[in-house]
Amino acid sequence: MKIEVVVDFSQFERAINDSLARMRAKIVKALTEATIEAYVTAKSVVPVRTGLLRSSIKMEKISPFEHKVVAGGGRYKEKGKPYYAPFVEFGTRKMSPRPYMRPAAEKAVEVLKQEL
Image 1: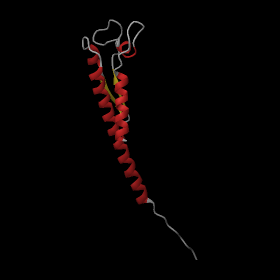
Image 2: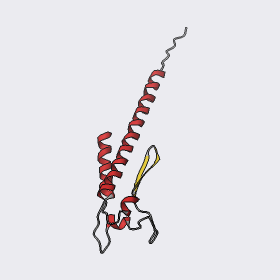
Image 3: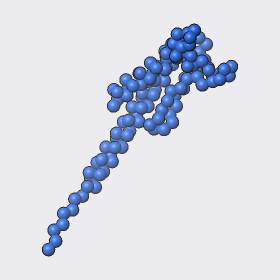
Image 4: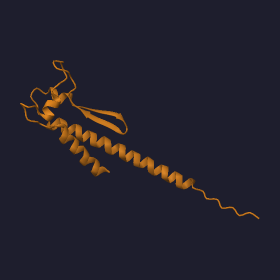
């Protein structure tokens, strides 16, 4: 005589996979919204003299879970890319800092907290 108990977890597994897919979509959406908010904030609060620094602020999506907002990136005397982006953000010994990326990052964190 034989007693057999069969436990079928296939529905449970499907439910978990569906939940994970929904969670992934929600996280990707929240990251995208936070990146957009950081981009908009950085563009709106950056100090403007010629507009070159503001025009250098870009938003990049590297992967679904990796987004970034960048500013500057040029070398000294390189046309079209302001080398002075970090000097404006953090200041120098002769110039006080005028942060624009840090407020943008703080805004992105707020958006993430709201969305997640």
